[in-house]
Length: 192
Image (cartoon, rainbow, N blue to C red; front, side, top):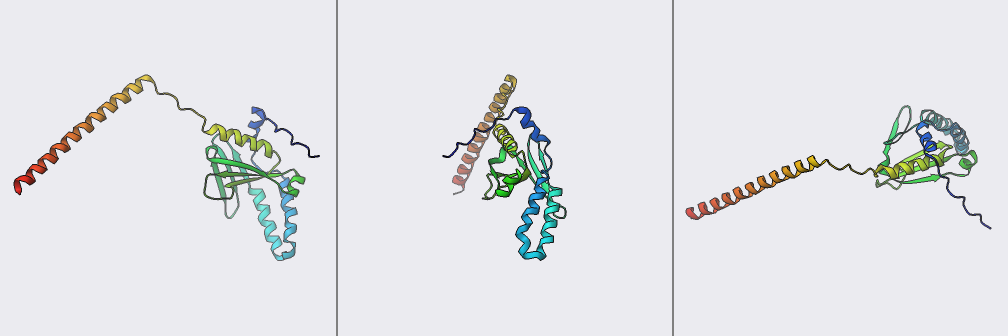
């Protein structure tokens, strides 16, 4: 018999605020990279180069979660930085393979409305991946929820007075153009 999935955990505001303190991947990610090097054993000459790349990727990877968006950067020679505003986020996926699940890790793939089918940002090496996913969902939903504040009554009156002045000016320009057209037509009629 298949067991039903447990209900999703609802995090408190204090727990979600802990995401703002996350800056680096968990050290288990380095162990995951080391286990992943087994794939490169058949091509042994490439192994040290790939190991060095993964080592520097782990040690330079930084995250920043703030009120406007999420930022991820890594690299020494070729620094890469991705900044996404919460309002641009369209979808969030959690993925993990067997080794990642064994180590307690998952990747958070963040997609935007860009034309690319691949995720715009992949946050890896976090043990608090469900907490981060829920934080991103709450930020994503709240990004466009701020209602515009109504203008004060005096500003509305000033806007309507300014609009009336613009309408009067456009009406005057329209009358002047009619007069120019009539003058052109009558001057052409006199020259013919």
